[in-house]
Image (cartoon, rainbow, N blue to C red):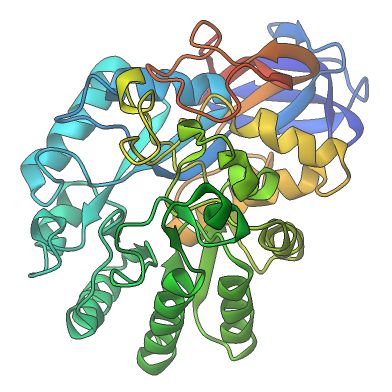
Amino acid sequence: MLCIANARHLEAPVDLLVKDGKIVTMTPAGHQPPPEDCKILDAAGLLLFPSLIDCHVHLREPGFEYKEDIASGLTAAAHGGFGAVMCMANTRPVNDSAAVTTFMLERARQSHPHGPRLYPFAAATMGLKGESMAPLAELKEAGCKGVSNDGRPVENTELFRRIMEYAADLGMIISDHCEDPWLARGWLMNESRTSGLLGVKGQPWTGEALQVARDVLLAEYLGLPIHIAHVSCKEAVDLIAWAKARGVKVTAETCPHYLLLDDTALEGYRANAKVSPPLRGPEDREALRRAVRDGIIDILATDHAPHAPHEKDGTLDEAAFGFTGLDLALSLCWRLVEEGVLGEADLHRLWSRRPAEIFDLPWNGFAPGDPADFFLWDAEANWQVSPETIHSKSCNTPFAGQNLRGRVKHHWLQGRQLF
């Protein structure tokens, strides 16, 4: 039996009692003495968080292990406070067969037998080519928890409808990368004054909003759920809010970088700020902050997309899209807490409760019997983002070199201390 004494949970001092991988009680600090056979760890005022769930990561294995592999990705997840991650299917080979899913899950078990847990996404179409549906029943049986063509939006609306229907019959949620492939062709960043000054091709917000509109209209017509991935523009927020007001079964996510940065981060042709969808304007950032706070955007996700240094060190047009995120996410979100944009309870909702509800995953609400997945957060810790201070293989992030506040001090999964 384990007792975490003198922790702080949502501003209140608490003691947490854990046995056999489950929560026994969470009580006011000092309310009752711990059992005699209990191992006691004095948290000394550190913050107690439920383990986080990231519903959008790219772990690169199989096929791109030089960027990241499942072992290094899950290590980064653990140190970032994540007890579970959902990995996208754009590997090589693509996760469009049970063999690939089984390989991913076995690699996770070998490298992290006690977690973090891995939940693969099934490819929506064979090879992510958008031409024919992947064998979703086979993929679910192998262990996939969701469906996505992330990185290559499904252009064929009739095919996308059939995928929605078949996935719903299997109890699987589709997470859609919303991007009109014609308006989006050849872009490097958001279409804006900044892109004009830099003289580079931009993607207009309509490239995202048009496909969000398609998805929510299909979801309404069919009466089926849809999840919108990495929302980046205020018009997409408006469409999601409109759909929710009509009772459409739509949920949505955004990422910490869209809440903290805008497209001026690319001034000077900074390739580390190149991401898909692109960083938008200040008005989009503010709209997303409001949407996250008010629940229009249901969850946060990292869209962890590691790349090797040579893939980001070239010119803006040559650089790969994407940021590493698992090590940084909660520290970045802590800025929003310090700014008063979000509170601790919001972080619990956005990173734990709602992801679990949407994708039907276990989570810890600190009720008796809940899985003992939790960590202690040192809100005063200061650290600098560098390849030496993160656990991912890659450090492709516009926050590289910056000082952040807050780090995970200790992490437990199913009552077992990882570090």
